[in-house]
Length: 441
Image (tube, rainbow, N blue to C red; front, side):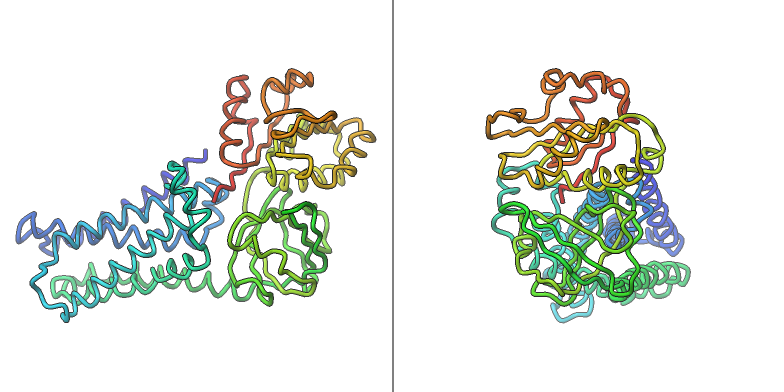
């Protein structure tokens, strides 16, 4: 169940927050009444929310496998929103604007709040789609006006804020003198920093890959191939993705998620396809053969062990660059000489957005268990379906019987995903046969 990890994260956060509050309560948190205790309680809520946010920022793979990377980021965004709201109300209730701005509480607390606020705002408006996706205006600003790389630099200031919050809290005698609280509070603080910086150290020590091939497939899609410097290829499942990070390259040292399009059976190299669609990806043309990169992962669970073990037909519904995990799965099934029926519905705007078409058409003609259907949403041309993938197209191509027998694998833009899930639900496809990879982040 995808929500199991969501509930787990929420439950653990509540328990850890409750423990700190209970220790403060035993230490006399309410001795000066509720009005004095409320801002202290809000500060604890803010602290633990940001603590969890930092931990989720390390992309824990066990949680990601349950929730998917997009839902993991959504949980991350919700904790950030809870934290900043609690912190803002704490500042509103606690701070007396007549107090000295040179006092230690001000010099640690106010900068911490402003840094947290900057990190949360850049997360919401520059890095994440969790909240802005509900506004066309904000989505347009995110895609056209805000710079992701600058947003990432500001976002990382959260670690400075976290240290300042700890210093701010321990300045107060009622906190410092509450030994049980200080022990747990310090464990939370030090443990979070330890986990975060161990994660960062692992990133710096990831195996290096050398770019061996860069191929321009369409006007805005590139295929890159990499070989490991130490001879060991990342172990991954078909359809999974990794965070691609240039190390020695004209591109910035930032991680971005791309799907492996090569088969996991290929132990010599790894391939990815990247579409120009943002600050980072618009610089892909600057990559050169010989550049050094690392791959962090793998992530994703589109083609799980359970899905692979089945003998049901495989129906792939891909929108645009959402074809990438399907290519990996398709190549893997071919190399495994699978007898499963494979149907690939690939939707693109125009024929110019379709790459390696001759290759897939040749396979379509040669393989009895492969059926290719290409749909163009902005062109009506002979030999192609017209419009977006829909139940009507299933009827036109005599594919409706797959609703009862096939496993469906869906990847594409958010609107396409929503449309496909609705279509499959309307046709009474069991949810256990619907496998989705979301990449709207």
